[in-house]
Image 1 (cartoon, one colour):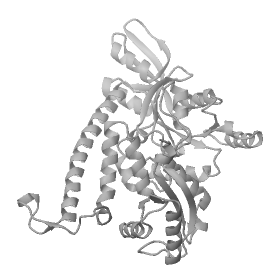
Image 2 (cartoon, rainbow, N blue to C red):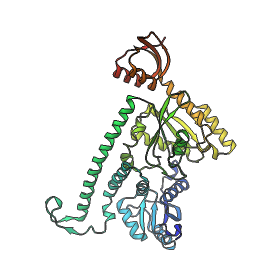
Image 3 (cartoon, rainbow, N blue to C red):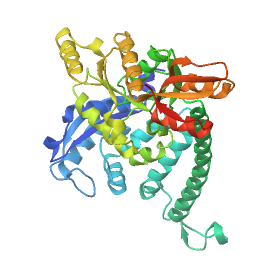
Image 4 (cartoon, one colour):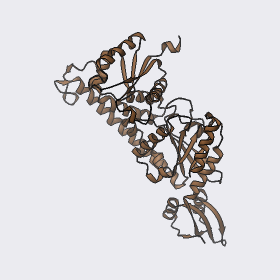
Length: 434
């Protein structure tokens, strides 16, 4: 059987609202992204179109005339699924399905479906299910065909006269509570792992960026890993961490995270907050940008907006390194313009994750940035304290060692956070280096 013929036939619509000229993106580009999202679910996109909405209708979003036109398009193309690249109310979704005689999915539902298909770890599956149930709970009026039934029950199971929609909502609530308990255990486990890392601390460098910006390809290039990297929206969901030796000999943990997107559903931001805690804890953020995209500036704004929603501190955002990726997809003139832009800015660099061009310079910039956040101090400690000595060699840059057999004097470059951890754990005083 032909795969394309077997795939669900879909019609992708981007509603062009009255205020679209004030938006940061053109309707054509928004439609192209929506088609990319649909293709990420292996749907057969038989037709796609931006549709002007002069006056949004509370019941159907589109006016009567436009609805008839869309109905004709659905029938002519044997469309099974209509994707609306925007947010629909439950009533609008139900009425559109009735009018178009096809399944209707809005942008939030589409992204939830993608996440549900891609989640690979047990935690990812739980997070997606939690987000999906939270979304579904508000749409029971649309999603269930047996809502008019009444059913009796016994005590806590459901009293006489409980409607089916109430029973369904109660079951969803119970499932949400069970998922939340499981996720709490996962968070506790991750917190313990993070505490263990901090006992033998290595700086964490988090890669963030718009979906399909090339984060995973860059992560693989830097770490030698095998994270799935495809020209596809949301190719990877589950975060991955690898230790990397930097050019100055120090080690750092690089973390690849889920890609962001404009209008990311609030349910998913909340659900993946735990997964993205590595970004909140990161010593340095690499903001990977696809500079071959016409919308790279708008995409960058969306990423920063999501990071702020997650609670990333402004100091960390301001100290992020901007990685201008996909230089291999630019012509010579455009590439030179971006290289000039990077040269004018502190903390910006051009790379091609695919070819590896500029990656060595990026690692040198990461090493220098992390080192610049450190201070040089002197520490006197007994030569017999091997644990403290080993801790310093792993957590700091030991520049000089002097002293007699009984006592050692070390000159080290160390971050303020690690200096505080060292004093708290071992109790030795730190003094400014001469």
